[in-house]
Image (spheres, rainbow, N blue to C red):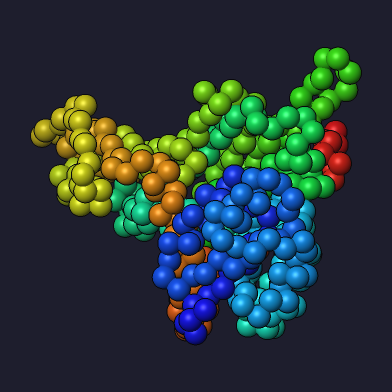
Amino acid sequence: MASDSTGVGVVGCGGFGLFALQQFAQLDGVVLVAMAATHREAAQAAARRFGMAHLETVEELVRRPDVQLVYIATPPFLHYEQAIAALKAGKHVICEKPLAITAQQAREMVSLADERRLLLVANLMQRYNPLFDKVQQLIESQILGDVLHGFFENYASDENLPAGHWFWDSEKSGGIFIEHGVHFFDMAEGWFGPGHVESAHAVARCDSSNGPPGIVDQVQCTVRYGRVLFNFYHGFHQTGRMDRQELRIVFELGDLRLFEWVPTRAALHAAVDETRTRQLCELFPGYKLDVNCGYGGKDRQCQSRGQPRDVAQTIDFTWEERRGKLQVYSQLLRYLFADQLAWIRDPSHRRIVTAENGLNSLLTAVRASELAGIATDGTVHA
């Protein structure tokens, strides 16, 4: 291995793990060395695909001198134990979200990484999406005024999540807020700053054959980011054909909608003057703009929130990535991995995603779970 290469060891490798490895392997200086702790045929096939050694235990993996970074792609309840083993062995760590399933575990992981000056990061790739940056610029520029409200609605498929799947066992997944919601808590924090969970609720399925409530498949919470209330809903109850997500941010002069859980399409409905129209067009090159109504003379003058408004037209404004969703997703993984490798090679490099992002998003998810009354056995307390 070249002296400037980074040897990567892999713990676990399901379908997503293989997808991620195919992105990581494309980066200069990355060598996929070995895989450990999985006996699944798909994982062994992945090891053959990349020419990696297949080891029995994590301990064997982290003892290898040719492994400098460990990528953890196992279910959430294993992240703490495996990451701690890697960090104690002096290895950098990238793990799939969430960072851990309890606040205490995550804090211990972050503390150990800081103490040993090692990388520890959860795969919160949403911050690398160009659309994430465009939304942040839209908020900070106040082209459409202040943000008033937001919501994220995730109507997800459960077709590949049978009743016995670890996803439904909160002792293994942490529950929906922790296993899945951290991505979206992190996005909102990136746009609005730290949040405080105001309320949360959970709904369990009723199993008509047995009577009592079954697994929790719907959760909802409200988080306050300064003066902005943001609602998050996650429901895993749809056929794959109806799997869909929408994030909406309501401004004083319009609202923005993003689609897909990794957003690749944006739609704006807004009341704007000529200057604001130009600013939107500059922010979203390749846009499509439809005018719903134009105003002139005294008709331009209107009011909202006790403030006078000058409106030349109401518009529907759309923007879409020219690349396909999987192409965008692939690029985000490459961006994240390259960003973290840059820090390993030069600790003065300023990363987009850090350990604190993984910790903060988990703390929000843990608090939402507590307020929703989600117990560690996956049931809901009345």
